[in-house]
Image (cartoon, rainbow, N blue to C red; front, side, top):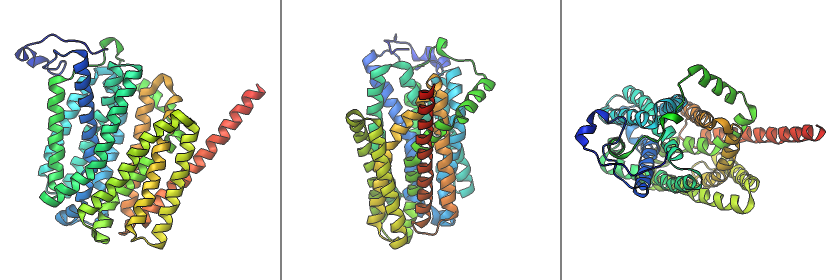
Length: 430
């Protein structure tokens, strides 16, 4: 479905049709492209910010709720767990009922949970509503990019997604700085207010301007049994799982690191909240820079070269972080340098392994993408929970988790190389 010029309609006539059609539709294709791209950015920022912006407020939340330091990581953990569960459901529903209806209900629920979280004074209630917020956040996370793919094709989509990714990664890098400023100036609750305001803007903007992108003829009948069979087929494929787990490495390590960093740096190493925010933003900034560099390397040197360089960087950073945690776990500069090297390597390898993952099931990219997202979020939730259990105020437990997963991915990569050699030999014999 391509963007087109729509007739001007009377908003009053559209009141009973708001779910199906936007209120304002009289835009040229060029203008609508900018509006849709802006909307996708806002929706992704909702998802990114609702995780990152809270982290600088963790030391204040510990004091306010009177909880143990290890418990505060649950604010992230329960959210990623619900994102994982909902992500498997949202995609098939949007394929059947259309993107607009599903996203509107998702944004509405996201807005309501954000408003409730602003008012919450009990930590258990906060965790419950963070879990529910994750369900809502899964909708824009899964469906926003699908709207671009529905509306445009080929090179146009690639350019738009590249531009949007640059804006989103910049927002992720800036979120901790903003979160730290808000926490220091207005208290921890101000971060929840910021997310609430973004969610309101996203809902209103989408309601007013964004049309349905999936035509009736392109929709699939919702067949639970068929969907389950597709997921089973994907999850049973060993190369798919291996490539997916390799692509997950940078996201798991960065989230586990960020989930614990504010409490370690502020409560145990005594640095200011503002200084902490810059240390965290540095890691995300490096990830952004090397993400752009990966595009250049893939073009000039190829996929294999890029992913191998990324793997080497990741291993060097992991070993460095492990040694720092043993030798001098209070050395903030070396901790951040080590994590920066991991982020650089991870950004080079994640995209290449991600492409390998999706290439295994080209006929059902939607299911494969949802499965990849679910695996990543599930592992993030598990490792955040583990970091909570073994938290001791130092970087040591985090380095153990990251090192353990790095060793695991090396084994996976070795298996893939051997499997590829066996397949080539069998083809040669045949």
